[in-house]
Image: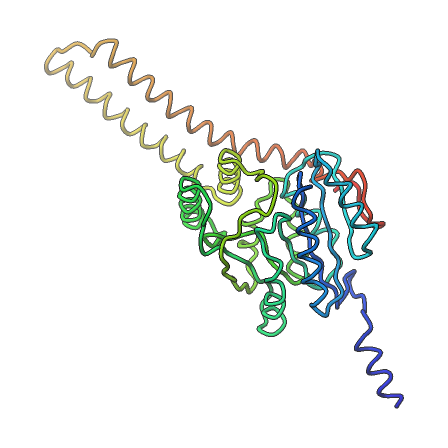
Length: 336
């Protein structure tokens, strides 16, 4: 009888080791102006989490929203003890919001997903099963279709995945989403990579770990408007390439070598032509074109180097990733 009591007690006791709960799932949800989508998301997420047979916490990160997002999160937290929120002093970007969630998650298993229901919470039970039963460290999701997305956007997205996988060590699957479930040990490694210029898709692939890719059909946003315009996605792609590859710098170097060789032979050709045929040097038009071409190539190469220098400058300034204005968590670092 005594043995049975102790066995039952320890089976149901949520033991805290290393700052995380062995029987807890943390769901991180970055939010930026998501007042329309949040009620739908909360209802859907809670209906799934309650059936997982796991203690859970919903950790919302308000990334400086200008609408009623923060008040909605406060209302959720007042009505539900499992809901926590962190609110930034301004918009620091989704990467900073995800990093804040990783730094303040307490669960043994940690998931991150968007609030617009393009990442279906219904996949969480299968993701949790794959980690627990099949021994994976992470279960990531990928879209197998881009239904409802503009054709030009889909084309450039596919080309980006092909390019970055060729020129970097970051293994990024075509159609990869930020929606994934990870063990706490993997998240600790991500947190330890405290670089200021973050590209999470690249970080997930670069650190390795045993990952299963779970495919799903594309879901359109449940409400509200997307915050990712084509131009923002393009800049995000450039940042990813710069953060995880030195190939652009190598291209600039090879351009310089190539132009030096071309110029050397051009000088020899002009001198020999003058000595043999006595022809005058070509006129102003050709000279202007050559100078313009070389000047453009130089500026292009300087721009590439400038991008790397600017990223280095951002890192050495050591500015915080985010500043918290308010939170329902007691043990949070306000500046990190």
